[in-house]
Image (cartoon, rainbow, N blue to C red; front, side, top):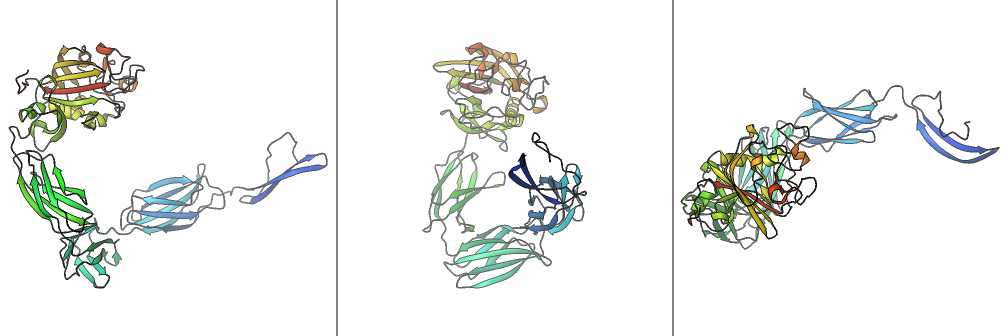
Length: 535
């Protein structure tokens, strides 16, 4: 009995590991009030291990572990697993109410030792141990190729671990079943004497001694037609329009492939129902052979092909938009340039062919706030966004471009009907080892010189500040830039922000409290002369 003013009581001298029923009621004089009831189990002197370890849903790289909890309470369970013949153990801690855990990232066809222990505070129970063997990895990406009226070739990707042989099974309603064996080195198997217009199911398994791998299966139909009349039209130095006639039975898709000059094969998956596709980014003055296969699921008919040669250009692999302009001015557009003129280093860019005689390669644009510029160093190093909209081309690309020649840089700023610019006669960005340090000089323009202050500064982002300031400028001003201490220009700042100098600002035009709605940063060769005669 405890006084009515108390709200707790300690029960002593109970037996360890025992479940007790508890009843609590109040007393007013000789009268009992309504009671409440509950149960409580005292802790065991020794924390007991879980029970009944079982494994289910065992696959090539995963398995499900389940167990029953001990009678006494556990705060959590620790599940550990390692290769049975030795290896680095992996552990995962799960809540004390959990009864299962999925193990992932396992090696196919391997035997694992798995233990589960109860955890209470800093105390751990004896382990509950078991062993499981994952399913051996088998063939994948099974396809039926070169489908003709009575013939097909089954093709698959072999498993990582070699097999002794493959078991091939092919069945279809109303057709005799086929069961065959292929050597372990095989990646395809020919099928003959198939029945026309019949749905077949093919299954391929690998065998390693007495063990069978997981299967690869597909269905395919014989007697399907190939597309016809594949032609290359409207061939230009960098593009070609391919057209064809669709088969009578519409395929689920097409596989279009062609060989690039580097000897690699490029494959493009197209939806069923289309009868044309434009190839982009081709090399000038180059012969191409294009092949088109109709697909029904994983079934492909033999390819049809056509050959064509792209047109020539004055500069086949332009290094920048200045050289691209010598191939024909035209309108501002997205196109492909080649770093250092190397055709193995293509880069998609936007060329401004109109401003001040054209030939400008745009490497930054802000226009609507749809692209997030509050990013890490690696994003800025490699570039992000859409070059037809908002984007940063990439600090690495800026270094590759400017270290290969002499370039000038221009900044165009717009707000409503107002438009100003700042141009610098010399512009260079150092390598990543130098933290993309900025070098520029020779200002002229109408925007005011807000960039010369930053010349000589290294680039910094929210997760990397080579200046090692106590509070990073990139963090303080929500951008990534060539900050000094800190900025007079912040064109990668928070779009639309007028708070704490964090916006897209150009101090000597609109000050720090105005966020510029449109910006473009662009470069072109310093000695550029417009084909129209401008300077």
